[in-house]
Length: 450
Ligand code: CA
Image 1 (cartoon, rainbow, N blue to C red):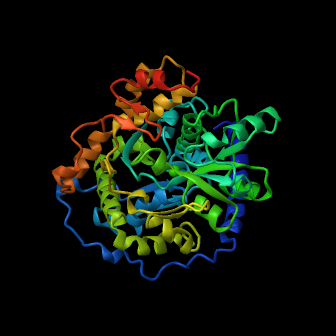
Image 2 (cartoon, rainbow, N blue to C red):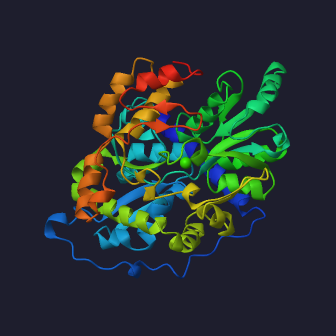
Image 3 (cartoon, rainbow, N blue to C red):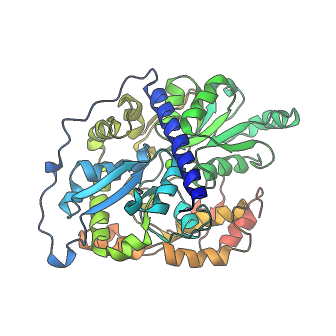
């Protein structure tokens, strides 16, 4: 690594360390304290199995990055309930990342240099890393191996905008957005990492409502903790993020939630497990062992009878470091939206194994295609790249490895999708995405750059 790069990384490290300190202060907030390490956690919970000789992993070790949001639950549960150990991966390290940029920098260097081998990602980060787009042109081939969860994210709006008609449909608030634009005080909306899920959700929602996210408002990247602080002081109007943040906004009376991502797109793809390709190629059996453990954790997480314990585990200081009360309701599908609306529906909760459309864990290539098509829509990728991205998907999406692992794990055939495509997807505004014809989707959208 050149001195120049070293200095950048060092500065990044210092900046992110600062952000972590800030977020832990804010996370304590007025909502109680995180539990200490939980005594109920025991790796002995998992049943011991004898691993067939041909499935014994090449290594017992791997370092996986995660962010302290509910998407990470299957990784944490696989570790804490002993599922990794059960499948022969007894030295899995789950490493908290200060933010998405830090995760990217850590996978760029790999675990041999103190970084990570892979872990939790927003889409299409594994593609952008594979192509060197967010890694200073250094291509780090990655494989997408499993979807961690669906739903569990939302749009939060500052409390001062409560009576302006901003709901899932914001037709009534059109004048408000027009006014802020013409007065030169554009509505400011944030996400924690650009050109990935959180930015896509807020862009989709606004554009579906006739608000052009590129010209009518201002979008920017801000660390979650800082966004909350800015919303308190009134300098930020909105942000798009995962639980527990939107819930905190309501509980601390900072704002309200006009839309859950589950309302924008029911059973939408959310975050993924992706690894450095060199690690997977070197350790194919360990990769499958890891997938089997995470699949078992996903089934465990999906059982609502386990969710109280799940919350106790992820809330500990080791992991999220939040009061369990912050997570309990939303994990059961109870959302106080802060605008008088209460949602109480388990099918709207974060889901890890099964959703309204079938299997959650399987990484559909058609979903990767949507994220990449959306990247074309907003000009993040060149407009003629719909053909190119299909080639990327063939290289990066390794649903074949998921299938092999599922078979080894004895997953019921009915739970294994028969196609790499989930078929036509429909959004809350009636727009349809047909993976067979992404251009038709782009053509059907009124607000876009491409
Ligand atoms: Ca998310």
